[in-house]
Image (cartoon, rainbow, N blue to C red):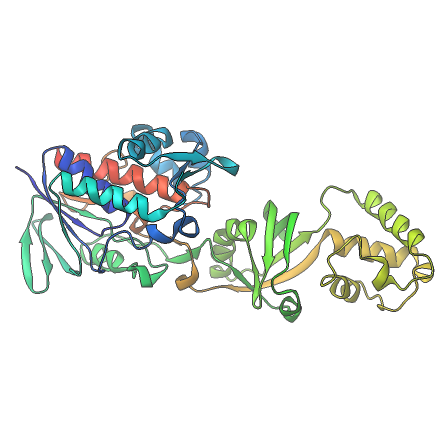
Amino acid sequence: MKKIIVVGGGCAGMMAAIRAAENSAQVTLFEKMPRVGRKLGITGKGRCNLTNTADVEEVVKNLPGNGKFLYSALKNFSTADTVNFFESLGVKTKIERGGRIFPVSDDAKEVIDALLKRLKILGVEVRTNSPVTEIICRQKKIVGVKVGGKIFECDAGILATGGASYPKTGSTGDGFRFAENLGHTVTEILPALVPLETEEEFVKDLQGLSLKNVRVKLLADGKKIAEQFGEMLFTHFGVSGPIILTLSRQAAQLLAEKKFVELEINLKPALKPEQLDARILRDFDKFKGKIIKNALVELLPAKLIPIILDLSYLPEDKRVDEITAAERRRLVENLRGLPLIITKTRSLEEAIVTAGGVSIKEINPRTMESKIIKGLFIAGEVADVDGFTGGFNLQAAWAMGNAAGISAAK
């Protein structure tokens, strides 16, 4: 019977252990934390966004960090396969906005318990509080791992230690160190799906303000790089929310390249400039004789009014019938392009996902086996693969774990 060791008890590690055991391997899973699935337990705000209804092509599009590398793995374990797998474990699922798939219970613990039950049924030995300190190789082949000074031998090993985000869950970048020590290339590690900090101090006055149906452009050195439509949030340090998190990976990369990074927020994307000007004129007519600060209450949230007026060089107490066409143009420009200078991302500790990792050029995309160390398989966030929110990162982990587990056993 083939002996397999899995290093890391996250989603990729547990899936790999299950698949290897189902293929007649003797599997031991080492997890350094007191329990497995710590990061899985906080995904989807504790509800666990298991996967998405998207097909393979759509999943790949939503994995900007080397999604094409996963074509084979995703074809062998699609989003539908993920749903079927969890349904077979007794986890009923439901579909929500954007094709996101959650357990009906809205409880990540149910998912973890189901995986643990399956591991137990298959006879997988799960050792928690057991940090691996070294992966041992001879003649470019894995032969075992060291845990607490003791060596455990194996015929194959699966590295599924996660990235470096949310270190309290156990993701502290150990796998990157192991891989580098074995001769692998680890690409630059950056935070992804992370809030952004701004130079502007006025964001503190907007803290807690959520904006829906806005369009946000990401610019580098004045050139548009990307844009997103949807919901965002102001914080005491800058901006967050779904569309900001989606843009953050590119923002992090641009900042690392020393580019001048900005955001432009179109607060009224449904209106063309002339339509927005007409809307402002109607409001001015309605609030005739009032000061401009009080004439914009139906157009903007109260917190935003003084900031937009300041950016437009308009005194808050100027009467609407005194506003010139040129001043209205400035107002329209700022409503359609509220500017923010991005100084940095929040830290890796706050990032949902790690961008970067073990180079995919050194991993076989069909099997997840290392091209450098025979018998070593690499799965999950430790590899240089990452995606947007919506269940895509977990789907990547399930698919990679599936491929690694089956391949290691065979």
